[in-house]
Image (cartoon, rainbow, N blue to C red; front, side, top):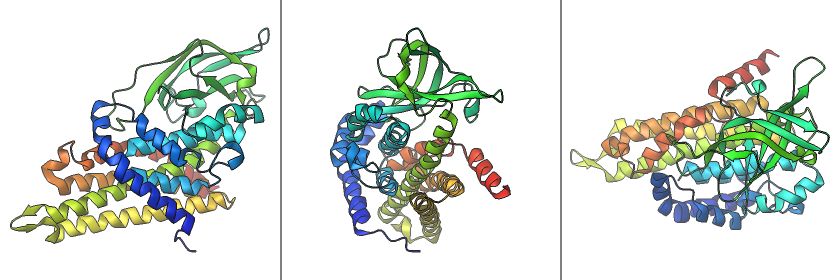
Length: 384
């Protein structure tokens, strides 16, 4: 098995690396400090085609694959995770459900702008009282046959890209009835931004990802046409499981980028910082820390490469995606902690990138499936 990149993927990786270095790095610290969304950066990412990477050209995409998206996420996260998660959520959680499950009409209506980065979409799954228990969804949608409309009531929490000036819609999972076995019938419904009864709360005050957009959403007798049902009625649970399986590979790639960024910054700092008459990089204690950090990033990268390869080959990849996400998120936290230690007091100052990396790393063990959930998936797959 050859994990070396082909020419096309290598060219993409290099292009995104240069963009992250030359465009993202100079401005992101100010956005992070002020908790502002980097619209200009997103606009330029759209012009590069990053939002359309894994989508077919017939829908306005770049005709690439999911692995290309992962490479882009890794390179962006080497510099900043807020920008990387904006892209990840916009593609794998925002546009992908419509691409995978939408009707031809829904695709024609929404995908062109989403794939150009001119609009964003949110994925309304998590709720204040459910968290990892997605099957405990309380949001409800009732079909009003007199008007042929869904009437939605409930709330969602921690929804990325849901309240920007360019957010066009959110896809919402809701209980739409009862299954024959007595369980909840879950479906997914498209809710355009600005729909009466759909309220976006003020942005959260977060520990990290401060330049990304995250909100709580409420639905109070929110009405949308019956045709806004995404995919089959009652298939919402299966649909979002498919989306989350793919998304775990993308989050793993993002986590690897953060971990590698910690290596980059630590190597740079260790060469420059003087202590006891010489660069601290001359001391074996620092060298070993950096070597271990590189080891972790390297192995985590192989894990997500493998999961992506299985996905693209049409093989079962659920366990490998969970392994990649679990390992990479753990590596990101470990590397961020060690990079902060190497930087000493300066690592505690927000002017240094490792301070952002440290604050951004922890959510990777929580978002899109906690580490505990990943262990459950791995164990259940092994046990049959």
